[in-house]
Length: 60
Image 1: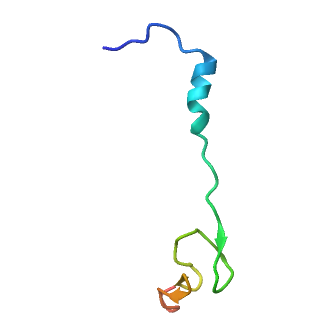
Image 2 (image 1 turned 45 degrees about the vertical axis):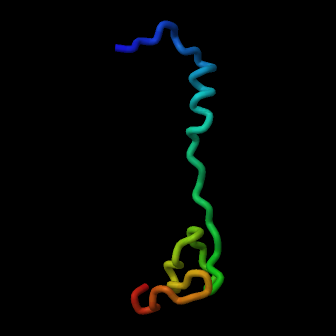
Image 3 (image 1 turned 30 degrees about the vertical axis):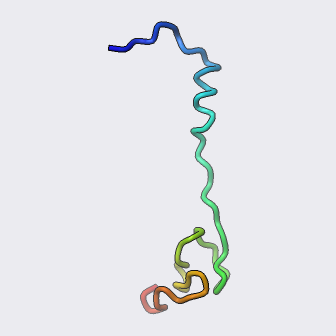
């Protein structure tokens, strides 16, 4: 079984964790209705994606 020979310092531990931070998701606005939405996803309010209706308004 592998066991560390030396204690990992706080500096080394924290440097390793420097890339682990969680960032907030990007928010864009729908071109059709102007509501905020997640990029590269169909708008939940109007059902449009890239200027085309993907989901009918009745389904949304």
